[in-house]
Amino acid sequence: MVVVPDADALAQAAAHRFVEIAREEIARHGRFTVALSGGSTPRALYRLLAQEPEAIDWARVHVFWGDERTVPPDHEQSNYRMAREALLDHVPIPRDQIHRIEAERDPAEAAARYAATLADVFGLEPGAMPVFDLVLLGVGTDGHTASLFPGTRAVQVQDTPVVENEVPQLNTVRITLTVPVITQAANILVLAAGADKAPAIRRALEAPYAPEQTPAQVIRSARGNVVWLLDAEAASQLEELRPAG
Ligand code: 6PG
Image (cartoon, rainbow, N blue to C red; front, side, top):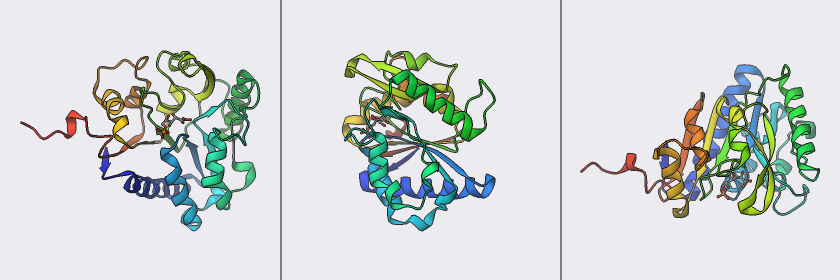
């Protein structure tokens, strides 16, 4: 876990780690596959990466998303649109290496098409799950991560890499990577900032394991390198960081 003073420092630290992982993976196997997150926290990270396009060999990068809202790609809530505007429009990444979730389609069809894209780009045998070089994640105040929301079906799904997920508490449907894909990534970088995240971060890291209530707990069972990158406010309720006595 890395705790930094504030949201600006969080974005700086995240950009540093993102570049480091991208370079390592490109050196190791010639390309870098990353699943981006949505929400507001990663936007500052994306903007920093856009400011230094030469830091990464973008010709070797394949960009995916961990989840998407069921809106068209130009919608203000689209995770694709956010990443495009903050980052992808500003770096020399080949267009055909940007693999968005086509969330303007029927959700089940969008999930199936995204699964087919994953199988193609990762060269998967039928039934196999992709191993991302990096999965970026956030945590919601309710303990969700990606679009794995408390009490929803997707938290239980093990047999497919991507599903549509009905989220009654938001009265919507999301499309999300599933737990087996997230937990077998080579690297996971979790970003959370702000006091409103502190209870969810404490539950995610320290409460008894009950991922159907706090889906972000599944990150605990990750096999690769996991870095929780938190600002001081988001980390403020962690027992682990409390001075003894
Ligand atoms: C999304 C996400 C989601 C996000 C968290 C935290 O599409 O909303 O990918 O899982 O990471 O909700 O979002 P914030 O950074 O906005 O708090």
